[in-house]
Length: 603
Ligand code: ADP
Image (cartoon, rainbow, N blue to C red; front, side):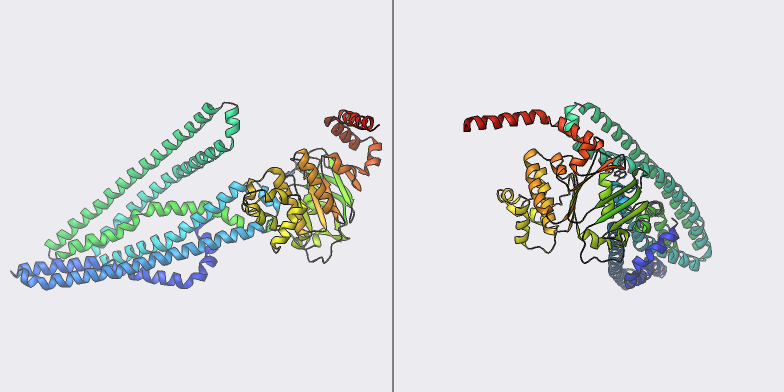
């Protein structure tokens, strides 16, 4: 991205603050004029003092001069304080406002993108956050540089240079001659730092990431006794960081020294030239100080040049990644015109192929029908494509090929948000937001009253457990156990009350008791709704109205449990393996013995 392009992109963001921008520019102009007062006052003072001395006059006559000069300098400083405050404050106000609009814009766009966008390489959670943070930060540095640094400093420099030229062309030329050398050194400095800064930044990230990983993997590290190994890895990083830090400092000190030297050469040249001109009686003695101070105004901004250049480079690098996020229009979630008043929930899927954005083809020529008001189970080994079907039904992704209908109309034609309002999704692990239990349950229906939240808690067999907590519904939801969190997801479902429910292994990570309780609450909610369930638990599959069996992305069998069992195909294989893993024969024997004992005692 070129600088021009960045400015063009930032323009609409800065436009609402037109007045602020104009005020800042005006203050900048006044400020740069005020900055030139000192050289004038000093020249006047020196020349007047010289005149008094030449006329053999003393302190008594000079008193008026002192009062005038003090008043002038003090007055100018007071004005300057206001100008600087206004300029910095307005500049900062523009920066802060633009930065929050940019961040909010990125969040708005992100929320509207398809799920596929998040899994693209370069968009994964951490990377996306870094791209946004870095992008906004570097763009804002650019805005700040422009309004707070570049503009005032360069306005100062230009005004000072013009005054120098007007006062004396030769002195002006000397100042002008020094500038390109100064520019060149600054450019070299920025160029050198560019590489090392980037390396430094990457090392810092690695270091902080390393630390986070250490904490995350503490249990594994300790259990394998790999403390020394991990410490050595961190040590190596630290060493590299140290070297990069030293290298940056070295470059800075070297070039800063060089610039000071060139600047001093400029000062010396100006002293020699102005002294010569004074002796030649072309200018007054006050002009020596006059020109030295003006030259200082010219060189001050250029002293900062390497930093400005460096930050500009950074903005060029990071803004591209940031604007890519804003511009990913093709990742926007598709939606359709149909606003369904009443969804019945008959899905027909026909000849559907689907490939994830990563390139993995997950479905091949899949056909199935999900009937309204019935429970349909999807069965298959891990990776067979069951969750992918649910992803397509929720419109998280679009199929590559094939037909998907809901109540006889293309799924793509439904308004995506309206459709999802009518679907309840419970996954193996559901996200619990930071906040209270009440807030987390209410996510199912933002307008629910507290009584409705409690009712949902009861239906999800969670209420009793919540009441035993010290803060009850106000307890931190993230502190709950896996089973309790799962029940929060089900309570959300009760509150949302959707006609269609998708359950993707809702009890896979739970203990037997929790599984049974959750099965009970799910059985309660299933009544009269269209349900699709994926589960490895036979209990939840066998009484489904229809079972579809998938294998490596293809639909291989379908029917009721009895039909599929008799077919002796994939379903039977999975069923038998599950039964064996549960050691069902032994369990059955134990239960039968138990039954006999009961009969004996009864007899
Ligand atoms: P199942 O639910 O039957 O275990 P999935 O539908 O989750 O299987 O996965 C089917 C295939 O798609 C697998 O090969 C899996 O690796 C792949 N897959 C699943 N989710 C994604 C994703 N977000 N991006 C890329 N590939 C995926």
